[in-house]
Length: 535
Image (cartoon, rainbow, N blue to C red):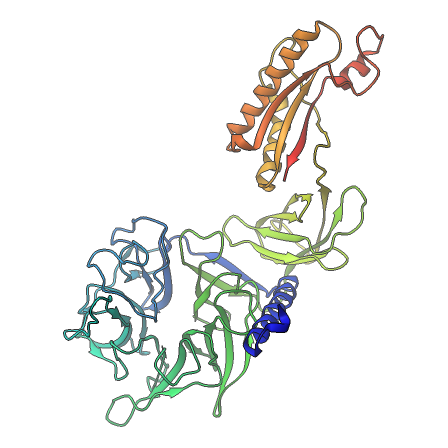
């Protein structure tokens, strides 16, 4: 209970609450950033640490050299708490291959292993280069010659930083960084400043604030690295990772403080007195998962890595472009379809075929808005607990005005066991096969089930009262079975939908056996309905 919580627990609870409030705020007013999953770079494994190099890009991955490999397992994102004595072929934490540095040769070029000397059969990753690309620092795992071993306990291996210089097209043998201590602590995530005078890195060595801290050291007159200084202004009791300095700002990730979840990307202004004015980059750069390895390539664009939902693998590389000014937008409101009242706290997703979906939460009046790119097609999807979703297609192709696109979305409340008629489902006389006109309507039900993956339904078929009762029962069951099979064939799990033929047993009007009715009244009873039976 709260009354038994200590100061640290109370602080954590306050951070969680404030994080939830901040996440809602950030999602309601997302940054004007377009994010794209770089599918040509990513694999089913972990791909991260994007670094511009020459005319191409380097990144770190645990794929096999051919780009294949098994998916799943734990993420191999370089661990700072040591690992078991490794196998030469398989990383014990993930079951995948070891991390290696890969190179994309030019825009749209092929992906090949980066040619370098490592002196290790194990992890190699997260490189950084001097401005002239002749000096490199990187993180690796190696087995020391004199390994301290504790009887009856597995040995642990800490990660280290090594440096190398390029002569022509060949990189020199790696040289150990001054602060490596493979049997005591880890160092990693190196970043070399543009002037080559400062090396930032991350370590869990004793004396820090907790977890992994960011440190820096400056090059001395003899070219060696000086004393390591803890960058206390940005460090916390949590874990800070992947420091990068660009255009007067220090960018880094941390899992501490107020954020959206996991590692969040932050930035701080770098001045003569050190970093100040730390700010979370907000949504959609950050997500409820880990977001890290932020690498700007210009004032308004760059790359980062994330294991957010919707990626190709465990960690994926994403690119971002920030728009300097608002060009086009869509705005609207989400309503309760039955009451026509606005729905606050609904989640609206803007999707694009070649981009990463962006979500916002509606305000107290059900309002939402998104920034749009020119010449693009989009899809809006609105969702809320206990409501059926709604969607709308929009496009900016051919728009000659910057006037906002207005769209309203209507969510239908879910009421268990309430029948919902599917209009225009017709069958040929005495047959149960799905006609083309009926298929159009059933495709709408397929879309509903895809957009509402938690609902289970019963699909029922009904006849009018004319004809033999038993025959009508049999025919309606055949028709229901046929409709359900059509839906299953389009990828809906068969456990989520059942077929039931009601024959003439549930009329919607007085037209039962022996009652004279018009053809229009009989048609009302010849219907197909679905009802949500579980959510």
